[in-house]
Image 1 (cartoon, rainbow, N blue to C red):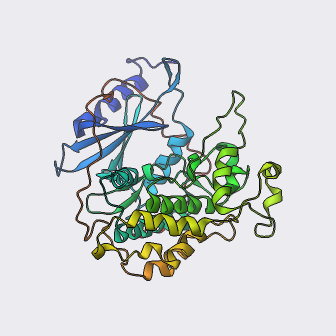
Image 2 (image 1 turned 120 degrees about the vertical axis):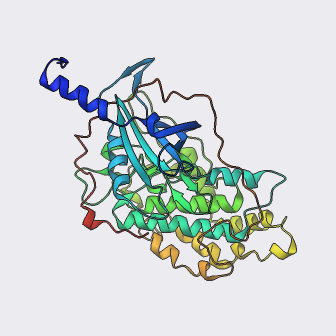
Image 3 (image 1 turned 90 degrees about the horizontal axis):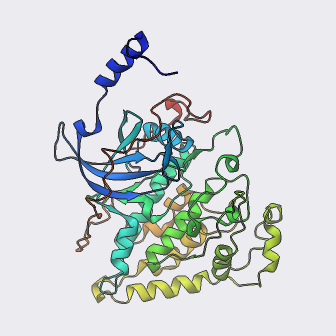
Amino acid sequence: MSLSARSPLGSYKIRRDGTRKKVLDRYEILGYIAAGTYGRVYKARAKYGDTTREFAIKKFKADKEGEVAHYTGISQSACREIALCRELRHVNITTLVEIILEDKCIYMVFEFAEHDLLQLIHFHSHPDRRPIPDSTLKSILWQLLNGVSYLHQNWVLHRDLKPANIMVSADGVVKIGDLGLARLFYKPLQPLFTGDKVVVTIWYRAPELLLGSRHYTPAVDIWAVGCIFAELLALRPIFKGEEAKMDSKKTVPFQRNQMQKIIEILGTPTKESWPALPQYPEYHALASFKPYQNVLETWYNTVPAATHGSQSSSQSQQPAASQRGFQLLQGLLEYNPLKRFTAEQAMQHPYFSELPKPTANIFESVNLEYPHRRISNEDNDIKTVSLPGTKRSGLPDDSLPSRKRLRNDN
């Protein structure tokens, strides 16, 4: 039932909407950054206070069937991201500045980061570029683990860690972003699998997820961190499989090719090292793989030698190729999630005690000029396209625990 402008409720709505702050009154849109599963991201500059300060504004997509948009309210994913980001405060987590509700649009305003990890990897993988300096690599990994540790201490699974979702500020601080798939794992009301049957981008998906686990732990994030560590070393994904898409019935297929890529390097998993293995729904599929031996150490010793070989003699300390570096990677990429390192265990690993030690600025002592994130003046629909409803009610039952339970580890 629509509200008449003459009714008391209709008049109240008009007055309320008239006083609601507008995105374009507060921010100047500088360009389009990227689009994701749930929204589009824009770079903006403040029109208030410090007018040189820049932000990233995420605008949620509408639910579409063809070209028709359906405004059915805020999505569950958006509810979770808003609820979590409003509570989380940590130096290595992207900070939510404010949420703006305008007409049927929802905008999340975040601090802006000049770089992302995928961009840095691409920069170094260019034939004319040098590999990632050891000090930078180690600082990225330690800060990433620091952010992941904070999330896990506060009962949050990220569930989509990958280089494209890890930002780096101009002053060299790593910021974990995009919590669109994040989920609380503290006493969930239903299995994690029920709400989201597919999580984590395929190349970074843990083996227990590939084998159809209905119940999983923060170890899935740690596996993704291990994949990112390997990618920082090799400048390419370590397990680059081809994803089998879900069918029209939304049946989750067994990701055979991705599992194959993992087995070729880590060897065939066994019940002796992973006792819970036979309990996974897709365990029977492993019988069709031919046996492989674990060659991770060979991979590790070969890749750093190749990537660090182009450095000058003054940069050839190669601590990344140390035995401790391999032990850390091995602990992050452990098949058995119960034996896999936690974020805190990984941060305390002796690898980080070797020189060069990690720093608060990953660019410290690095004589390289990284390009800024690409900003496009096209695809700017922030003025014209409406988005899902502005209701703030109806947050999921598993929304964030009380503030007292959260730690502020800034």
